Length: 365
Image (cartoon, rainbow, N blue to C red; front, side, top):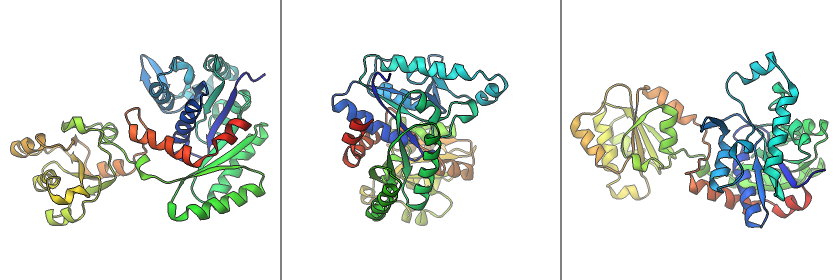
């Protein structure tokens, strides 16, 4: 028999907002007086902590809420490179599930609710016989599916994922539509709601798009580039919203600065570097601000420019990548919320609280 209430959060794919909704739901549970546990049975993005491989989301929840549950039980299966090939060569299908069930028993001990975070869409994990649908069934949990904004594509992907959960006998509690642009909010909420109702599916809520949740920090960019801070490391958590690639005249460069802009430029473009460093001293910087600099390639600015740079309050990253590689990497960077991202964590919790039918979830799971 199921000892505690639980719910399994799945998604229609990567980067649709599963983690932010888990943060919102978990926070709401705690503030509503539930003694809640958290587990992500299978994690694909992990950190190394004291010789343990721990999923980033499990570590995030563990650190935010200072949980007494051992973090390794909050993510029993981390999937490193080569995991699937090794499993196919030496498959023992029961071992993974047994480890998940053992950890779940630890997590649910003395708890009255367990939040279970899946990994991607319903079928992820099938290659090692442990899909999200399979795990949800094993843990006797209903499921919530998170999808991103839209009508046709969102519904198509939802129905596709629901089919796999249905085949496993897992009940779909409802759907959260995430990242909906405000100009389309009412339309999407109306028509997705109508379509889901025709299919007997509950719409739990629609969350508006907030680009602040997807903006990387300078520290996250440095990690991606494998670079180093030449100055301004204390400002490494500056948020980045816009990118300028420094391949134009200073005059043209200055007209392109927007809110929370980083400048990517070769290390020997001292004219652009100085212009960027001086910009934040101007009156225009109150609304259009340089939030960081990335200097690319082997060349570095001379000693005078370096001294100005080190006396500024702008974080400067140096990378050996060329300008095109750097700009592409920053543009394509997929941001995961970190423990230090207090603003993003708070925003995730506020959005869930404002837009999702929490009472329906806890009363029907």
